[in-house]
Length: 163
Image (cartoon, rainbow, N blue to C red; front, side):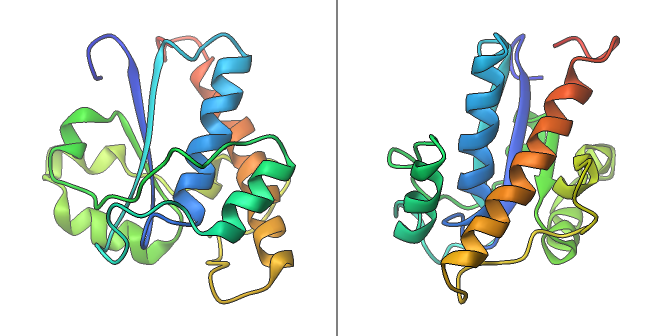
C-alpha cells in the first residue's frame, strides 16, 4: 500500500496502448465511484521502447470517443520499486506476467494477476495488442478493459480490501 492508498499498476509491453488505456479507464471509474483519492493508479511497460512518449494516437482517439483522456500520460518502464509501491500489478498477457514474475521478489509474486481475470463478460484471458491492427482492434481492447476495470473496482469494494 502506498501511504494509505491502495496502489494498482497496469502493465503492457511499451506502455503506449493497453496499459495507459487501462489506467485511464480505471482512474475514471474509481473517481466516478468516489474512490479516486483512495486508489493510486499508474501504468508501465515491460520494455523501454517508448519511455517518455505519449500513448499511441489511435489509442488516445479511441479512448477519447468514450470519454477517457490519455493525453497527459507518458510511457515508462516497470521498475523493481513498483513491487513495493503497488498492491496489485496487472499485466495484460501471460508474457508480461512471466517477465514481471522474474523481476519480483518471491514475497511480491502474489501481487501479480492477469487483468482479464477481473472480466465478467469477456472470456478472453489476455488483452491482445492492438498496435499492428486497425481501429476495430482498439475498440475491442476498450471493450475488454472496461469489462475488466468494472470487475476490478467491484473486487476492491469487497469487505476486507480496505478501499
